Amino acid sequence: MLGGLGSFIASEVSGAVKRNVIVYGLFGLTALLVVCSVGYALNALHTVLLIHYGPVAASLWIAGGLLATALLAFCVALFVKNRRRPPRPLATTALAAAPIAAKLLGSRMSWRMAMVGGILVLGTVLGRQFFSGGDAEDDQS
Image (cartoon, rainbow, N blue to C red):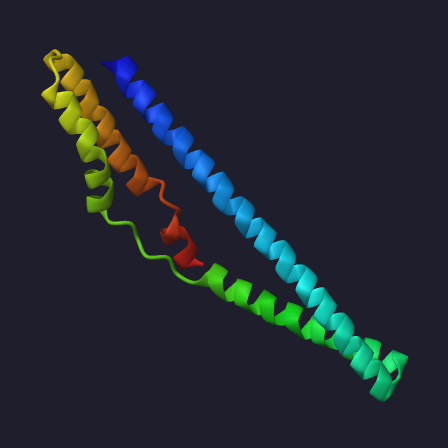
């Protein structure tokens, strides 16, 4: 029974990993293309500014725009970092652990194995609640 369950879990995990690699690879390619297109757009803007204002002024305008964009991104990052996270509900963890508990109770095992499974599920639920990010400590300071 455990061999079949292990192979099922392994196939599900490998399928999810392959799918995530493909998705994140495409996200990476997209990010690279966006960076390249922004670079070409900045080069074109520099050329336009060069024609109208000269080489030094054009470079200063581009550098100032990049600095302003970096400061804006830094402020957004600070805002997101300091934003309060909502607590995880206990029901979500319990629902995630329910199929494992049902499998343990439905199989032909001794009461000791069922009790060990219940303790593992309870430990998972309590562990996720106790160690879910430490938001209470962050709110004190």
